[in-house]
Amino acid sequence: MVCPPNIDDRTKAQIVETLDSIQKLENFIDESRFVPAMADYRGTIVLALLSKSFTVGRAVCALVEAGFSDEAFGLTRTLIDIYFIVRYISNKDTEARAQRFAEFYLKNHESWTQVVGKFYPRITPLNSEFHKMALEVAKNYKSPHEWSGEEQKTRSLAVEPDSYEFDESGNGTTAEFDYEVMFKWTSHYVHSTVSCLGRHLAERGDCPYRKCHLMQMSFEISDCNNVTS
Image (cartoon, rainbow, N blue to C red):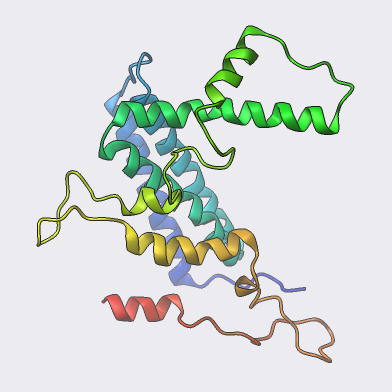
């Protein structure tokens, strides 16, 4: 099996810096005493997503500190997801989009109802007023796996032109790079495709089982830094 590597001093310092940044931002939000209007969806949803991002950020740091860098990298896709969601909701039609995001919970309710009926047929089906309402709202969503209703799903959230930030040509900026590169890259580690198994593949005849390099990614993080610096 592959043992987690020792963490170098530079990585340790980056972990401390990252955790400190998360804490400072959390303190700022708490001290600002935001009170979301409970009659609206936008404040409640965005603040909940922000809170989720704090927790995920700390979890990523914990995994890196423990030596599980690949697993931490996969988890960062959740942060990219949150970025796309907040970007999409806040870009336009904010309240309607926030409501659609929130009510997707009812589509999930419908899905679990179907799962229970399939695998636990002896359980009496729900017949409450909430259940009936949930099934009615769930009709607004075509898929149990996607909430926005956009044709290109997650990509649509990323590439919609920004309503507030523009490039030199006056066009709304997009997060296409973040989708095409970072979201795609981290997705390999979420779905465990062969592209994420570099630390785990063994050469024929290896004993004991050890890490090898049968495949190399086309570029590493350090190479990206060199290109963008």
